[in-house]
Amino acid sequence: MIFIQLWSKNMYRFAIIGGGFGGLVSAIKLKDFILFEKSKTLGGCGGYFIRNNLTFNSGATTIAFMGKNEFVYKFFENFGIKLNFKEHNSAFDII
Image (cartoon, rainbow, N blue to C red):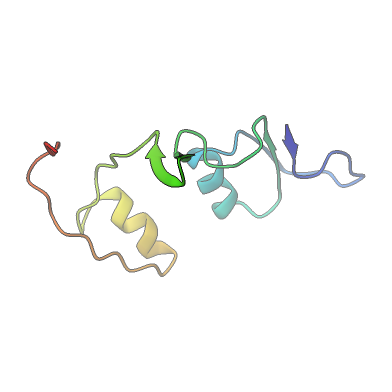
């Protein structure tokens, strides 16, 4: 388990359980928090693995609502991050 801070005399206003996408987004928005995560790394389902010196994405690989007036775009814009995505008409590729 990762404990950002195992014990402290400080009191936190918020306790975030889980360092997945939701927990990390909450941490960005909140100032006074403690984060608890059971895994060795942060990111939740959004991760990767390595086999034979090749890196593969795993977990959450499709993110919706990325258009200019949609939630994810506006979320990043709120932090001053400009996204430059190209629209893809198909949900799947055949390789």
